[in-house]
Structure formats: structure tokens, C-alpha cells
Length: 88
Image (cartoon, rainbow, N blue to C red; front, side, top):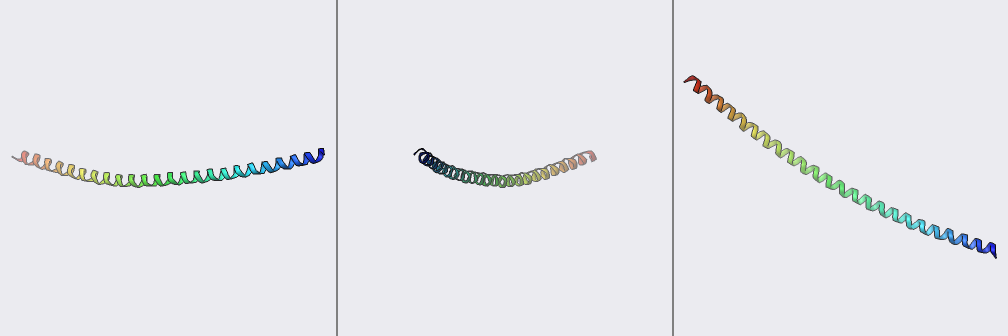
């Protein structure tokens, strides 16, 4: 009787242990899926931010070129006025 009780308890313990392990594995898989999904969303957001930043940098570059061109033209105009005033 004692041996059969020990065998029965051992089998029940192993059976319950394997059930708990499967739940842990499925929980781990679910957590892995959620982590993968979160990482994917973070990657997409980072990509969108990078594209927006690139567009903003291009726009800023164009504005800087425009401003530089205007500054250069103003400098040349002032230089011409200064030279014409020196000649008079």
C-alpha cells in the first residue's frame, strides 16, 4: 500500500509539474509575441521619426541656402553702393 501510494503521489506530482511547465511555456511565448510586437511598433515609430527628421533637415537646408543667397546679394549690393559713393 505504501509503495503504490508513493508511486501515485509521484505520478500526480510529475503530471501537475508538466502542466504548470506548459502554462509557463505558453506564457513565455505570449510574452515573447508581445515583446516582438512592441519592438516592431517601436521600430516603425523610429522609422517615421527618421523620415520626418530627414524631411525637416532638407527643408532647413533649403531655407539656409535661400538665406545665404539673400545675404550674399545684400552684401554685394552694399559693396556696390559703397564703391559708387567712394567714386563721387
